[in-house]
Image (cartoon, rainbow, N blue to C red; front, top):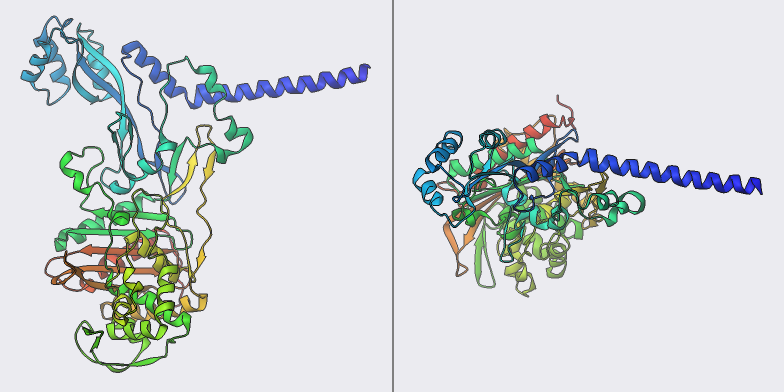
Length: 573
């Protein structure tokens, strides 16, 4: 009996100790990890408590060493208001506020101060901590100083369309309206609570993230794969391109082709997330996922991959290049109208020959050609974690006519989003498999536990040897043709291709002087760490993408090699 009693006593003791340890852990979480939150709320109760203090999770960039940097966070300061009924000396009150806060209009202030029936007139918002305290300490009757918290975007205009912003909707809810703010709104939203009324319930919140399964908890901070230094560099390059050529729009994406993690992405023109106005609304949408373009000759790399993979051609196949031809009563030509005669496949990419791309497409056959373009995702959404993504338009490939397949082979007559395009081209860099492009990598729960996000397995499209064959051909393009061979990196294999497409008008006709330029490349070519896609829409006074985008691409390539210390993959003589 005594032995059984001792066993029961020990079990009970163990339960008590475990419960005590758990409560200590939770108290630490509430009082230390969330201590700042409660301190702010307590101070705000002391100053003024007209409404619930705004709260929302953060979005983080991730540096190359794994440290986190805020992309969307909360700033804390004060709102300054007045109660006209209690304001004894409006002139004195104005003088105090104006000497601490710039831009306070005296006439407007005095009009507000004359509204004796209104107990609350806002004078200034987002006032810094020091200024707010200085005004509060004067104890002027009628001046109200209350705690305020607002959304702050430290990167300002970098990746603005993809980070997104919060705003009020018709239901008067402040929530994510664009970008990651919208896509992950359920994770970022925080419900308002009283100061300490829910203290004990907080002891037991997120228990599932500690003792059950972290995957079942949604609320938390969003951690992204965007590297802030690389993001800054990409944004600078895109602005330079747009400013130099007066383009209507310029965009770019840098991605890991093996995982789909997006390292940087942006478009220009853009807007400042901290101070945008209604006139900026034309830039709120994200062209990387919401706009379709005819990408032109970079699609020839995918045409070549399908041709080689299907067995329709090999890298040594030749064809008769006539410069121009007519199919289904429609004439099309090489970019320079010149015939090359008997021409090997390498020159289709090196000289960007439309005749050669058409030959490959028709040799591959309608069904197989359409099947490859479907497998690489051109007619579907990619599943990227950004809102409002649209599908590509490849309905021309439903046609029985040869001409639609010929034009599609060199990137005209079909239109895709930039995100879908880099995903498809990424198959060449990833041994023939496509991945799901994504920005977020994990959710950091309030408990401190980080829940990694999964994005599915790679999908096989081309045989690895087919992708390797095209990579070798694209390396030859860089080494011998791009920039006359002057941009070759002796110690690093770089696979790349330019694209120039005429822009279609509203009636479907193609303009003779409006172009869409694109450029893609990856390196090291046979074990790629990074793939880059650049584009610029309607650059002025320049015709070919090789003129506008070669140097920016190589600048980014050299930058990434140096920043990430990418080791050389080929010996120099």
